[in-house]
Length: 119
Image (cartoon, rainbow, N blue to C red; front, side, top):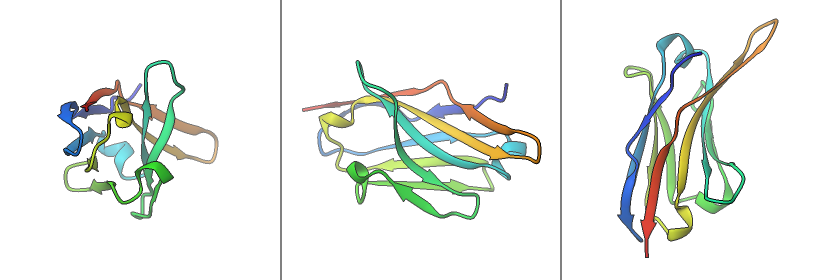
């Protein structure tokens, strides 16, 4: 199983910013669409943002304008810049990489990084 490694989570006050990183194996990075998901205590995991291999981005309505997803092919790393954080953004954030070949689909997840926003 490939290893996606998230980092950058932590504790921040409401209104603050954090940048999450997701290191991806090169063999996956160059073929995969990627995204960020989050899971708050007692809630289901939800999609946050996505970026295709060509760099097209899409966002959940609740993070539009505040969050920015990006990918750096030189570093094989995906990012999520989070601004104007709110207590409701508190969750474990997971990165995802996915792609398809002629015979199967591949779906990889990181271990998660905790983001806590205090009011």
